[in-house]
Image 1 (spheres, rainbow, N blue to C red):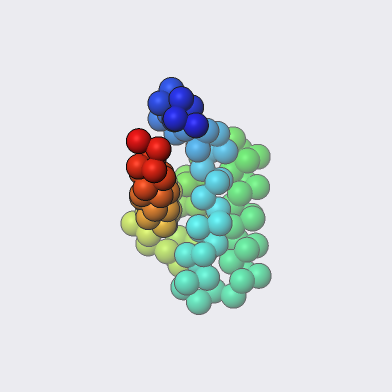
Image 2: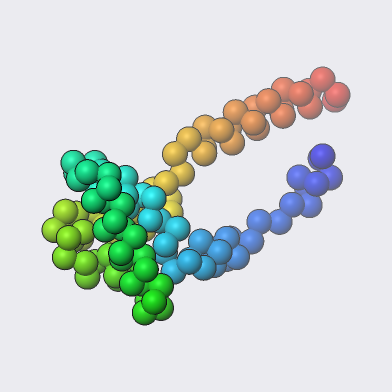
Length: 114
């Protein structure tokens, strides 16, 4: 395991490329959550996101552009709120805490063998 971790290479450019492979549609769940947070009924919010996703796919445009141009969504969310949905770092949640916990467990375990 140590050898694997020591030789592990993380290609940040590739990760970013993969995130945007869907032209931003990976963020549709967060868009739905934001609309629900504004009090929009789930079915109505889901249909709005679905409509915009299909439009963006059919026109081969970025999802965020389709979202910004949608009257219903842009009436419900500000430009700033929409843009923040499409920032990957805003969706890391507990990732850092999980990584730190794993790191601490590994360090504790390693000490037994040193």
